[in-house]
Image (cartoon, rainbow, N blue to C red; front, top):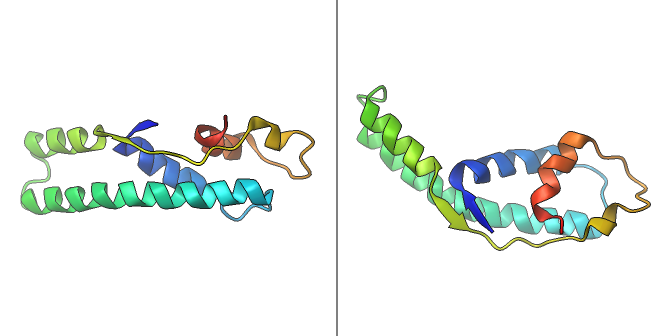
Length: 109
C-alpha cells in the first residue's frame, strides 16, 4: 500500500490509541506487525527530517525549509501491511470506538 510520510506519522499515532485495548489475538498480532513496519518507514523519514532541521537550523522560517519539509512529508513509500478480515469484528466480545476503528481501517480487508 502506498502511503505518504505524513500518513505514516498519523497511523503510528493512531495505533497508539488501540495498543493497549483487550482485542482478539489475531488483531493484536496484526497491530504489532504493522506498527513495526510503520516504525521502519518512520525512522527513514525522521533521519531525513533531522538532516533538514540541521540544514536550516538558523532559518526554520524560510520558504525553502517549509517547501522541503512539505516535500518530505508528501513522499510516498510502499508498505506491505498484515491485513485482517472485517469479519474479525463480527460478534465481537470487545468494544471499540469510532476513533479506534478509524485507526485500524488501513489493515482491514
